[in-house]
Image (cartoon, rainbow, N blue to C red; front, side):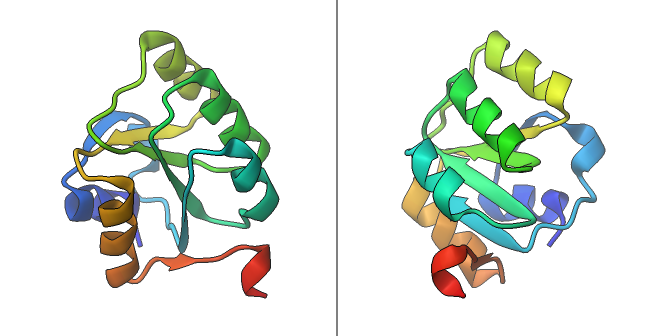
Length: 118
């Protein structure tokens, strides 16, 4: 699924990363513990989280995550946005909760894929 389709499904706002709108995303991860993200995330994933600090961007960079969606209407500060821009990471924000966001993406065909699913 393309990032532009995810934006429509979640009624999300694009904060940065216009260059990734055509990127294919095949799986998703909803987490507020970045240690869980590092332990379980595989490939072509969108990270949905309520955390809005630089640790999220740094974790995404380490795990090759190119798209982050902040839930519950949260929007990161300029430091986080600028770091994401520097790293080529797309940031979205949605008013939906983490649970609802994950459910909508799952219903649309995004799967949860991690080391526990193999």
